[in-house]
Each structure stands twice: as C-alpha cells, then as structure tokens.
Image (tube, rainbow, N blue to C red; front, side, top):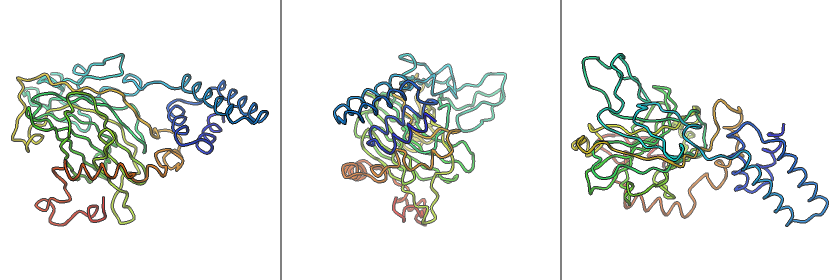
Length: 364
C-alpha cells in the first residue's frame, strides 16, 4: 500500500521530471521504505500548517534526495546483466560499471566435449572434428521489459574493424514470431566511415534495414545509443539525434511490437560474409584482438514479470505527450541525418522490393 500510494502521488501531482525520477527508482526495487513515507507525510503536515510554498519545495527536495539515497543505485553489470556468450572474452571494468568485449579467433569457441553451443539468438550445430563456428561474445539483461527506454554508451573498435559487428538490441526470443529492435555497428577498413544499421522485427517479420554513416569517429570516445519504445512509435537515437522513427500504424494493418516483452542484448561477433561492403572486405585476424566497450547502462521500462498494469499505464513517463512524436529540434536533426548521412533505406530499394512495403506507404 505504501508503494502504491506514493506511485499515485508521483504520477498525478508531480511534474514529469520528478515523476520520472520517482518512477525510475521505485520500479527497479520492491517498495519505498516506510521511513521516507513518514518523511513525506511529515512534510505535508508542515505545509498544511504553514502554507509556505518555499518550504514545500525545500521539503519535497529533501524527500526526493532521501528516496534516491535509499533506493537509487547506478546500474551495474552484475546486478542487471548476465553473460550469454563466451565468458572468457568479457571483462568487467570499474567494478562492473563498464564492460569490455573481446573478439579473436577463439571467441565463442565451444568446449570440445559438446556438440552444440549457444549464441544469444540461436543454437548452432558443431562437429567435434571441425573448427567451424561463429566467433563472438555477448551479454544480456536478466529481465525482459515492456516499453520504455534503454540506452548504453558504447566505444567501438578502432582502426581496421572490417568484418566485425558490434550490436546493441532488444529481442523477445520467441523464434519465428519474435520482436526485435537492432543497432548493428558494421566494421570498416581504416579511414572509412562507421556505418550503423538499424532493423525492426514485428511478429517475426524483419528485413526493414536502414543504414546511416556516423558523422563522427565512434571509436575515439563513448557515445550514447538509445531505443525509445512506447505505444506511439519506436525511435533510435545516436546521442541526441534521432536516426530512425517507426510509427505505430496498427490502424492501417501494419504489425507493431507491443505484445511481447524484450530483453536487452549486446554482442561483438564475426560477420565478414556480409558486414563490410556486402562481404567483400574480410576480417583481418592479424589485427585481433578487437575491443568494444560498454558503460552507463540505463533501462527504464516495465519489467516482466511485474505489475500487470504497468505496460498499459498511460501515466508512465515515456507515454507522455512529450514522447509521442519528435519535437521541433529532434525533427530538424532527423531530417539532417536522413539528408546527409543515410546511405540505405529498404523503402527505397526497388530491386529488392517490387512492391513497396506497406509501412513505407503509411509513413514511418
């Protein structure tokens, strides 16, 4: 009852920024402590007695700081994620606040006494006498989420990274009917621009690739990559620049991911049969090991299993009016990216699609 009453107070009576803060720290842990409940009630009693708005702000700030101190914590790898692929090639840095993924010819190599090994998405048969396998490593969130926002800061492979793919994505793990939202960073030969490919699967149907050349060197420093997913649209961000928008056009008969919770995944793997110039540029193992870095993990959404009404709650901050469409600044940035840096859009690929996909006609 304590958590429910405070959640209601936060979503109804407080500004969006404060509501968002309370939501973030409330839903990630079981319930607010009774001590802060008493503090809030004491604050309200004082306000009723003195009617001082300045005192109200001061005491409200005191309550919020208390809530953050007691229930807030920075996301760390150990608490929120688990290794799913090649444990020996994943290292924790800064007490689990950052992760190093390592790719070499032994990444993802199966044990010799096994006939199968797992990747994050599928099982690959493996013959004991052969050395054929996909080199790679990866990790995933311990929970799945319905709607919300996920982001990570990533520093990509420097120099010659041709044939590699560094990925950050959400996936429902439901095979032929899976939902999936992909960031895939395609390696390049030295001096060439880094390309990020996005893709969207809805009810098992994908093949919605778009590619953008990044306008900076993503291997020189960390940059923030974000997926915003609500009932209205899906937006992929690079720092504060939207690079892709996929609108909910279910009213026009177009599938939209909204029925399946998705986990958060990050992988680094060998894909030189397609990743760089359509597979013409192969991975140069003499340049290995290849390193990619992840930090500042941030997941704000409805965990499953969890409260049954969370995903449908229109009071969740990511469902608010400010997040139902791009604002004016974001719209300008989105147009700039598409005009100056987009190099492939499946909607424009007439050699691949003789009939324009319906979501392209509906306006995505």
